[in-house]
Amino acid sequence: MINTQTETFRGFGKLAEASGQTAVECRFGGEVETVLTAHASVTLLSAEAVGGEVRYTGRVLFSLVYESGEKKVCRAEKGVEFSAKVAAEGSAPALVPKVKLQTENISVRREGASVFVTALLGADVALYGEKNLEYLTDGDLVCKRESFPMLTAHLCGGTAEADDEFETDFVGDILLHAETVNLSDVHCETGALVLEGEVNLGILAFKGENALVSFERLVPFRVEIPCEAAEAGRSAEGRVCVSEIALHADSDEEQGKCKIAAELTLSAEGCVYEETEIDGIADAFSATHEVALTYAEAECAGVGEAIKLTERVSGKAALSSAVDFSDVFQAVTLQRAEANLADGEEKRLEGVAMATLLVLGTDGTHRGVELSLPFSLPVQAEGECTVSVLACGMSARQRQEGEVEAEATLKIVLTPKRKWRVTPVAAVAEGAPLVLPDCAVSVYIPRAGDGLWELSKSLKKSPEEVSASNPDIEFPIKKGQRVIIYRKKSL
Image (tube, rainbow, N blue to C red; front, side, top):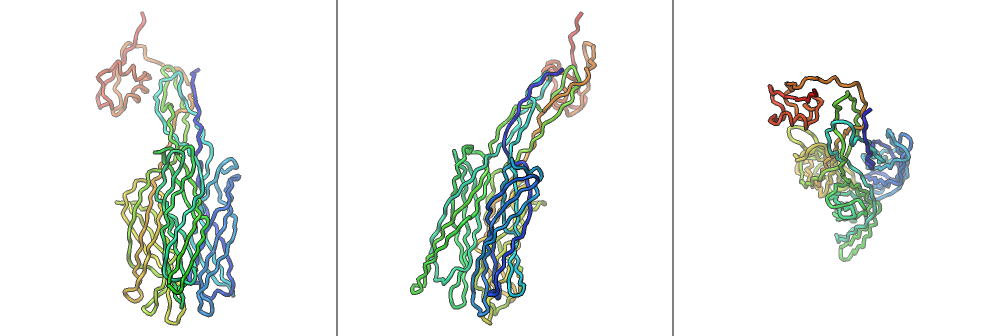
């Protein structure tokens, strides 16, 4: 019976991922004559893992800018709480679910005197739990030892405040605000995970005399989350969202100025990756018996160093409805972008920057026109990456009648995904005894390209014995080389 020794690596990490969609609807009354633009921001309230699925609840804040029957521009807000679930294989109460929600699409429809706004929400779910790996460390075998890199994930979270105060021309009322987070840096310091970036705060306001105006501010932030596992040099990932915002506008009509103060509450989540190595066995054989090896298997997933880019894109925009020279462009609001990496001869980031263009017609009525600016940019990135794109500073103008040229600044963050699989030997089953040659000297012609370990395994001799018998042999084996094995004979 072959004697063996085993150890168990106990860690914590991502076990599974899943995604899903759900639609949340909100009803507005008959005072809404013409919808100019609609926005929906979503906040996660709770999440739990149960048998085979992840259940979560959230709240959607719907914001509507519309024109009334008297051609007056107005705003309306309503909050809707919802619950949904995502099928996730292996989900169980012992696991920790992390749910990321985002608004993927907004649609508006009228039924009778009511207007219904529907937000299509996407949910990305990650399940974390204990990851145990039992592996062989020693035994009555000839072993090929190897260090296997393992990852342990440490989850953390926290909140922070960010604020900004700025002065602009006089505005009568704030109609709409939207916040987009650009997380540009995630790194570890001793005892803390640090997340830095900026919030693009977009504001649509009523200026008076049927005029609208939009402006934006980049509000910098730094969030420090306490985490005992955080050390300088360790890789980490995280995300930040705006959970609450308070806007205060102090207008001075005589001076024609307005001071706006913004107070933001940020919610942050992060994961610090601790990389350790286990001393295991990659392969083994017995010099006396046939053996059958069983391998353990574990997948490790982390992140690499982020790539940050800033690009200015421009071109002809696609429009949801026609415009002409009689239209007055008043504001560009709800700037956003989406993109993905496309493989080819060179890696490119392909996507579209979008916004709502608010137009005033000759009849004194407003309308909202959705514009889309496609882009394709070459990037230097290896392997699979997560993509984050922030669109800001977007503008639109009409040089030729009916054609709109748009420009936008894109802040891009590409985060490489690191994945690898470790497969140490976990167990050995003993088979039949080997029939060994009894001659004093054997000459072998090995397979070209084999290394010392492959040769030793085929000969059922330790690498030390093979090297001692053939001190001049070079690896990898060249075609035509011969190997000599000496055996001690007892008289």
